[in-house]
Image 1 (cartoon, rainbow over the protein chains, first blue to last red):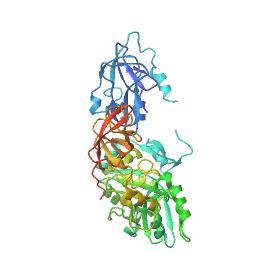
Image 2: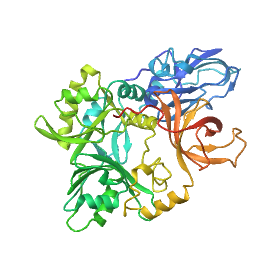
Image 3: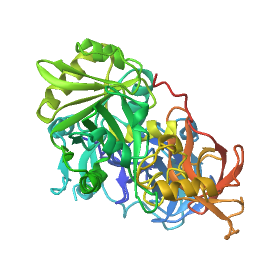
Image 4: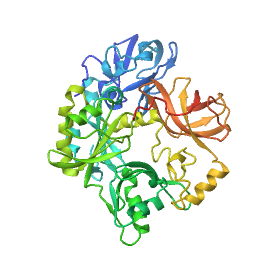
Length: 127
Length: 371
């Protein structure tokens, strides 16, 4: 069974968001990493890049396939997890911790309130 | 998740119990991975892994002259080997020389040849052989009579020995044996580039044999391995996969599989077309590509001559197989490129709009250790 921590917010595209702003941390869920298989290459957004909620902002590749990483919120990327360059498998081994992907400063008027809570996200993974 | 129309191996319940991710391989629901492709790949390169490849086809050509019949239709020269030996060969289309399937032929005697075609192509190979077979020679599709377990890696010999099975024969040879009073065939074959064996057992014996391999493999830290790892392992060797690197549209001359064609033979399917193509020179050939820029190639990506993504009319070829090499930790590919291509050339793959540089190399990407 995969885990879905109660203290995070989620998107239907399997990203998690930690914090309420102005800067939030983003990664992919345990369910997502398990479905993708061994992550071997992560294309990160660039620090300073403006990203828009629901738009692709990076890629996650396993040996077999490539998946888009979607921005869960709109804002400006403040930091990316450089450790994933050398150790992309951190996304598999610790998706909510060492395997975080980037941090974003919410754009004016943006909040995380509209994102899914753990129960609602879990619901989407049973579909 | 189960698609009812897919066929399943005799180990299906075991794969499920191990938590394998399953996928459709040529009409069969087979494991892609258990614990993870990268770890399973490493187990085969460093220790030993066991694959269920029961989806592979099995067929017997039997009757007086079976050997001569097979030799007169399949591409490789079967006279290069004798009884107890196996050979990689091709079933080509007689008109075009395109590849209907690549398969292994096991010579049992002058009157019996056992074939292992690919899962998706078995029916077609059997159909073509049946239609051409002379009087007295029968072709029998035995897809579900036998299961196949591949035991691959540097510790495979010790593991096979631990089951009391024979190991003392050459690469591409086989021996009949018995395990737990059950008959099986031990073949020194595989698709990983490692020293390895393929065990062909009766369908209903597969479950017990799998359990015995896992138990006897504990001291070697054996891993069940899925077809995801089988694909990364074979790609590192530059072994073609039918449907990707060989097909009805990709001839053995183009795929550099001419070593598996008996050019001196009087007859085999596709001979005329292939001899002509070889003499004229193929319009494209299969090369290896190794990443310069970080990127993972995928089948059907376009190969460009220019680094600039705004140049549109510079497509020179196409990726036929591509993956991340867990051994090299680099993107690698097999690609069809023009005849002017040379080793060391730099080409550019269109990776979703960005152009990534790759160097043209001769496979294998990783040292072959089959012997």
